[in-house]
Length: 77
Image 1 (cartoon, rainbow, N blue to C red):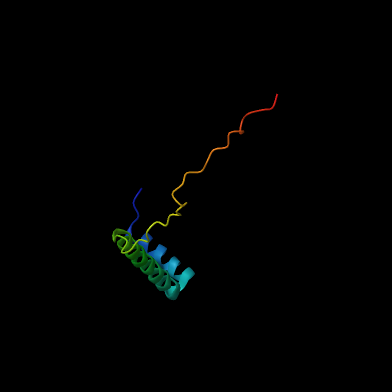
Image 2: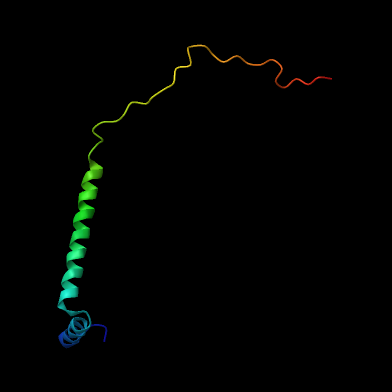
């Protein structure tokens, strides 16, 4: 009772063809194939290491450390 015979599959395929038509099904299969190809290409691109990385830019502060204020945190009493 769980499996379908060949006649069931023929009826199902006929109904699908009547509802969607041959053109829409072939377009759908073409879109699926393009999606798979794009996915595979994206996976191959991820495997390649980055060719050039830009160096990290730093700002030179003139070599002197900032001076701390002595009145920070003290209160006049």
